[in-house]
Length: 140
Image 1 (cartoon, rainbow, N blue to C red):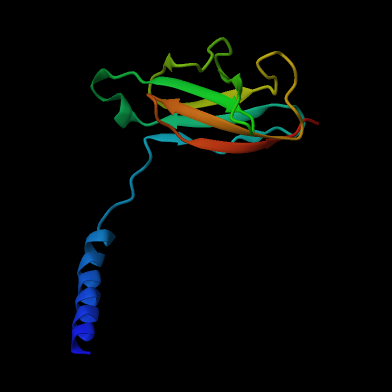
Image 2 (cartoon, rainbow, N blue to C red; image 1 turned 135 degrees about the vertical axis):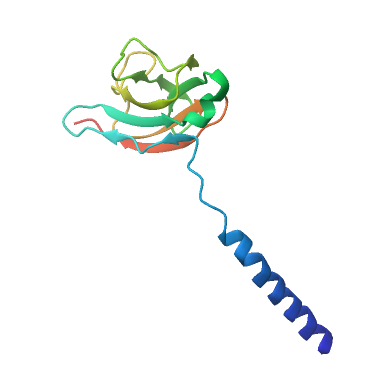
């Protein structure tokens, strides 16, 4: 019986000692941020804000950025464009660090309208790493 009490006390003390070290960790801001896509209810467009943090661009590094839309079967249906530069397609292009706004007009790769309502996933890839967000897209 004493053996179990010692083990329990040791585990308890070990956990107490480990707690202050874990509490001292500061939350880090993600280097890549993909915000929730916002659908426009009056016009079938999705605005997708994203950001690439300055720590990625240290020592003159310019990351390659891609932003794609996939359907529920993981098939790529569209590649997004920058809102302020509509000729720039976000398909593995070098892009400086900063905050951007991409736009998807609801058309898929073959030029037809996306299924509405439909569940779509947005994949942001910065130098082969990045987050995913989902959006339920509905056309008016």
